[in-house]
Length: 115
Length: 117
Image 1 (cartoon, helix red, strand yellow):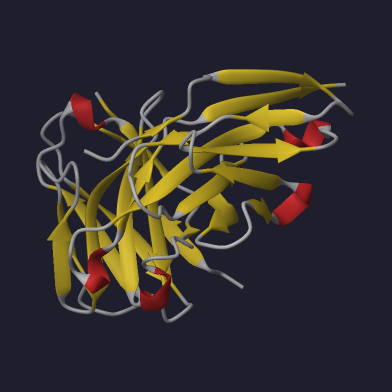
Image 2 (tube, chains in turn orange, brown; image 1 turned 180 degrees about the vertical axis):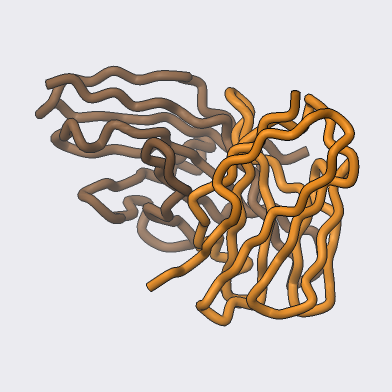
């Protein structure tokens, strides 16, 4: 049971470099989310998607782009990385009916360091 | 704006003692409330939820949470702590944005629970 898989798990970038984080889920979930986790700040929503081909901005979308070309995949891109984007990134997914019930399934996280 | 507060950064409990991790929420009306747990270097896992009904909600790993509308609280509890309960605990609340498909969660900052043998 793979669940939600994130790649890569660790990455070090230099300021200005670009990269893409991949999230894949095998539970046929409609909704997918990208969060960042910073000490003392809980989770903050970056972008989310309610279905294939649709994305929307969350609380902290600046500096990030996303795409959901396939239902099972949700990509998070950083076009020009900045030190402020050093964080742990979590992908999550849920059934549409779970949107109100809050039962999300999380990946194990991707730790990104921007120098 | 909606907010979720976890007033304690860290809670220390001796193994075998009862534990409480506090959470307060801000929305009026009927909130949807949740607890998640994060073990070191892992993603978050759903523990339990309150949607409606009984104010005492039971969840995974022997945890329960008590919903108190008058105090706008949703404290997580366990009668007898285990060392393996040591983790980061997050309280969350659903934020409604007016569109059925776009409910999102508002997260507390997290509370580190340390259970000492």
